[in-house]
Image (cartoon, rainbow, N blue to C red; front, top):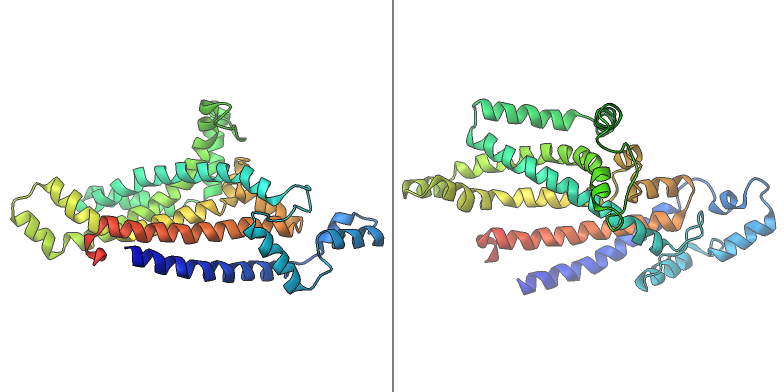
Length: 313
């Protein structure tokens, strides 16, 4: 286990360096000039020159990359051109919002997707299986923006139970925070639950047809022991992989959902940054997202060892 973790950490460092180079290089291909956008309509040459000097836009690309990555190592992601704030402060403000939304969405996905997938596999070819597949296909085919709008119309406009948009910090009002986050979390969670249900069903069907499951049943073990201890643990490996990837996708920012519900997370931040050519913000958000994906994959590998003893050899 220790050797495995050391090997993974040895891979993570050059991977992050390569990812940072890709992020910085592709960022320069965006159309438009941030100095011209910031200078305003008059395009004063003196102001443009000062902006280029302040944000190192007049330096060669390798020098700009070195200045950026050396600052990132120290925790300095640069300064936002649009709102004149440190990018690290913006990330610190937006990350808890996106993280809370991602955690709530994953909880909803797990509570719906795992039981539905298990029931569908256990009752394969019967009405619970058909019902779970219908619900799963509905979740996969329903666009998030449409479901979000319909939920706003029902629960906010007609019933008045929940706020239509906005965000309240849990430190200020915990109940208000949950009321504001429940609809966007449900919209994101149901889509992930549908995918998770399909993967859980497929993995469980494969495991339930294995020889060791037939042996466990022949030994007279209780069905709940066969399902919970033997079948589910072995079927959990692909589900863990899916969960890590989906959680990383949520951390990257659910752009449409955050826009519909006016949630001030990563999705809204990066959309505004792209439209305003705010290079430092885009680079900071994408680098944080890429790092989150790498860390989540490492945690998924560790979880494999915990749920499947055979992998420890």
